[in-house]
Length: 188
Image 1 (cartoon, rainbow, N blue to C red):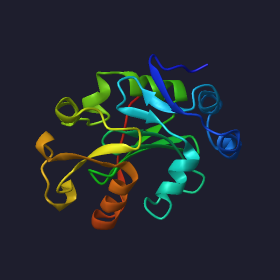
Image 2 (cartoon, rainbow, N blue to C red):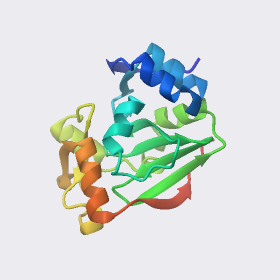
Image 3 (tube, one colour):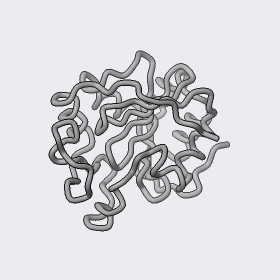
Image 4 (tube, rainbow, N blue to C red):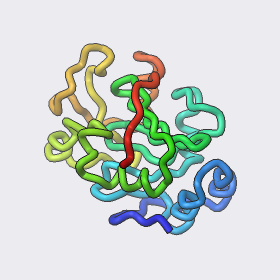
């Protein structure tokens, strides 16, 4: 069974929601939803989310593929989505989607928990400086660049402001458009 090294539960995920999504995701994911619910992974940069809530909040905002399921969000407003054996890492702040192909859920969790991947796979700079300045965002919050990177903003901590996660994603989608496929991330 997949376990996080450190996990802080925030809310349970209903049996109804789990039943609605269990056929679309690896069995390890539904087991985590049942045992842990939604919550903060490790230091809270990654958040295991309620897929029903995420789908509701992103409907009409981000063009997710049919039968996709949001698994994680990040403190910088990224989404980790599972669809048909692929993990799609949406990074709306950059306007890109990175793909993780052929990885098991355990390999994805290892990528999420590996501090060496924070800069490489997750592009989390300058998040640490903003977190040190203002604290970690709440569960449905994120840091967003103001102005948006797509509108000429600079990727420094001084331009990161706390925002509602889903509201920030809606602003990016409205002003900068939908993210496009950029690269493949390596899990090993």
